[in-house]
Each structure stands twice: as C-alpha cells, then as structure tokens.
Length: 73
Image (tube, rainbow, N blue to C red; front, side, top):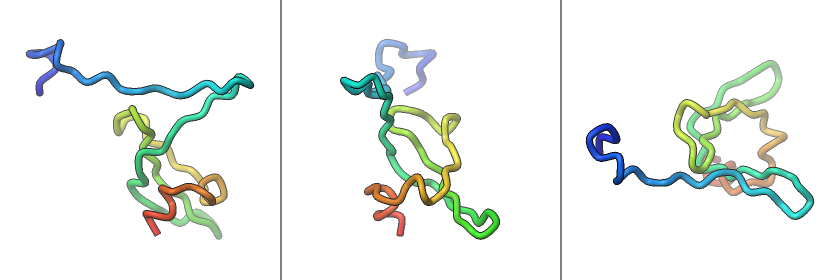
C-alpha cells in the first residue's frame, strides 16, 4: 500500500523493549548480508520493526548466540 494514499492502512511497527532493569533490547528480524573485515566477519542486521534505513553492521561476536545467526549459517 502507498502510505500517502492510504495513511490509515500503514502497519504499526513494534519498537524496542525496555526491561525492568531499564535496559533497551531490540530484536533482530533477519541478517541481510555479510562481509569480511580484517580477521573477522560482520553481518548486516535488519531490526524488527525497522526498515532498511536502520540496518546496521555488527561483528560476529555480538551475534554469537542469536537465532538469526543460526538461520543465516
């Protein structure tokens, strides 16, 4: 849908979750790409509820125990 033609039909995107301790946690929707940097690998992460403009390159060590990395590999 074109949001300018149908503004009431635009889907609400969920944002980050704030834990009881006050920490902000974001959920990964999927990994979009990977690249080599030095001796390591970085992954382009798409955050849940965000569009491609918010994609971010993260090193593998920050994604070690995530389901998104398991699916990508």
